[in-house]
Image (cartoon, rainbow, N blue to C red; front, top):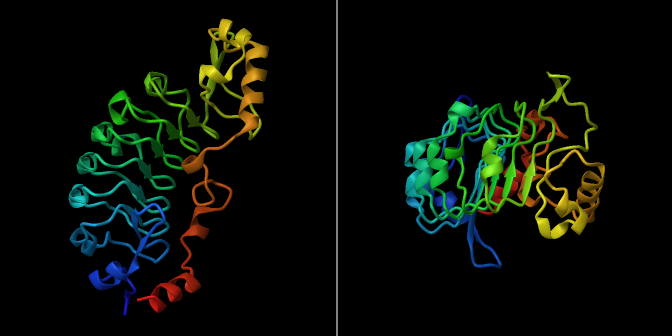
Amino acid sequence: MTKRKANTGTKVTLKEAKKAIRMKPDGWRRLTLSNMGITIFPQCIFKLTNMDELDLSRNHIQKIPESIGKLSSLRWLDLHSNKLESVPESIGKLVGLTYLNLCNNRLTSSGLPATLASLSNLTSLNLGLNKLDALLPTMVPQESLQELGLFDNLFTSLPDTVKALHILTRVNMKRNPLKVEADGEMETEKSDEEDGVYLVHESRLCSVCLKICKDPGGKHLRDCVREKLEEKRSYTGLITPNSVAAVNQDVWRVKNLEHYQSFKSNI
């Protein structure tokens, strides 16, 4: 039986963790321990060497141990909606990761390690709903990243890091206090809730836009980009029901009794 303590939260045993691993249609093995009231990263996980995916989202975890680097088989890691204030440097050892979701935590720019750039296979990184105001070039892998979530943070301008990402196709910067120059002064950009900052590959622009792409303020270019985006505004891991700000994050942390009972009944 899973043990619960008033101050330490849910404790998951190795036996329970093993039984919770499910084989996906693509052959990957996923361990889901989401929304269980976990406050301390389960140490038993480090004894599992056959996981491809790990979901510890919607818990109360405040710290990721340095030993996270031992989970070398991981390809997919979801830690959204916890209480993380920093990420250990050892995460850079998870070179097989293709997806990392750190959305809806308490991360500051100083809490992100430069070793994130070592994740050479990472294609999707979600840092939305945190307290970030800067993103250094050394923080993200430049050769592999295709999707980047920076929404609901404290950015006042588009980070130069984003401009340097060679194959980035989607970036979400909605609901940041972005500023634009006006008459030599800086003022907060006024835009409706649907506005954000997006990157579009040149293959999706018309010939006219390609000629004036160096003039992003041009009305034709703006309208064309918006039209192309409306055709298929999909952000996969960047906007999901478990990572947007539409629902108060405290609601996500409420214990889901049915989910918990279902987890117990399957072990």
